[in-house]
Image (cartoon, rainbow, N blue to C red; front, side, top):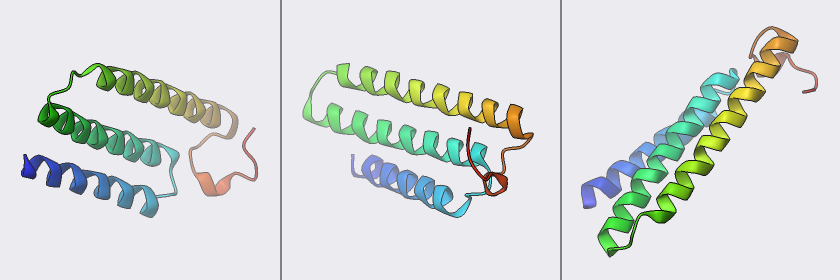
Length: 95
């Protein structure tokens, strides 16, 4: 169990590092956010299986993370349609 906890912490930290270092493209930021969500899900599944609870909360978490991903992709598509690219630094305002 300790290796799964260390792995999930390493995955979370690497996702946060990519999120903070690669702030030029919105798509890379969205992918790193999804990577962080997957690592949190892995950590939650390890924790819930260790204490013997059911996995109902994990289904709610997955539903919310899918909604977050769909919202992020819709914002990305909207920005690409209006501005032509997904470079964050070229926008003066998002509308």
